[in-house]
Length: 186
Image (cartoon, rainbow, N blue to C red):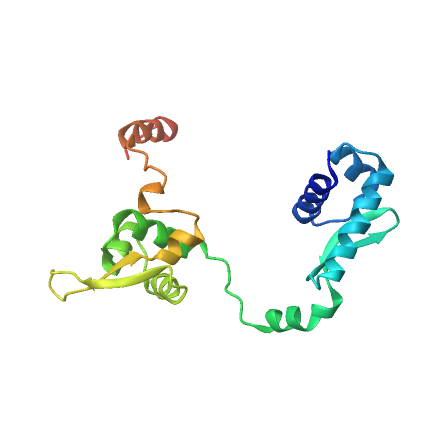
């Protein structure tokens, strides 16, 4: 394998694994000897430094790990100080799924499906820009209609709503299985 391919493979491995890897593991993975692997890793590190790149390869006790360059620590620190979005709660995920599959949908419709108040979950999803208001329903009180956003598609790696997994249309079969398991009517 040519040096640029070895370098690309090593970079991908170090990035994906994120932990220190022994030279033997790396050499075996790229199918070359340990000395060639060391030479390529050192060349890569020299290139990163010469180009003022934000990453470096750290060597310690015959292990190698991709890490950030010390000269950019202040920027990493600045980023760490920024408010971070938390992971979605189970409640928010359930609410988001309802909006995604039933949109446009009102908060009242979500609550009927979930059986609990959905105010907090809907507000969080709007705050995270995964859900947005899309107008008002024509029913009495003219409740707000909610739909998913482009950010929702990006967050879940979808190109369009048609990429959502199909809902199980075999509801009657599932109902029969559940009845069999519990030995009664649902």
